[in-house]
Image (cartoon, rainbow, N blue to C red; front, side, top):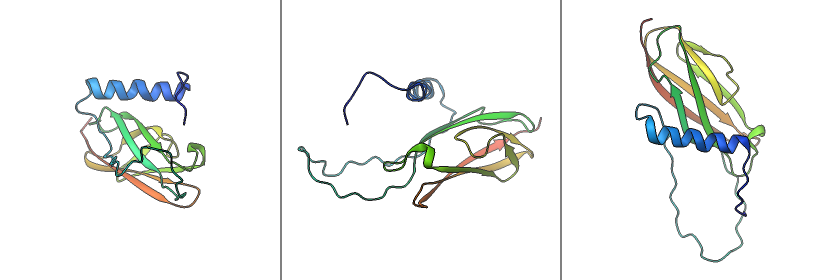
Length: 142
């Protein structure tokens, strides 16, 4: 992979959002990541091609503690080493509430009941490899 100074609008938006989250939003969520590098070769070597699954990088929800009836905006970062993003199927589900676009990474969620809620994003790639991101939130009375 060759580094360039050019980037797509989506990549620039992702960098801006990550910078904002890291710098100013202590109460926002972040997906857990596993980024261990074990035995990285110093010289290029032949690598067998293994199928990879979607991986969640980070997520942002504003506000993280919404009132019942008020929408909260959600953005999730997902990658898959061998499947383009447009070939990954997404589906949001929640214990009590609705999403404005349950098939997109960027959506709005509106609570229908107060209390603890679980929001789940299912990501499935073109080989049917599936990952689930669970987000725990609390919805407050209006």
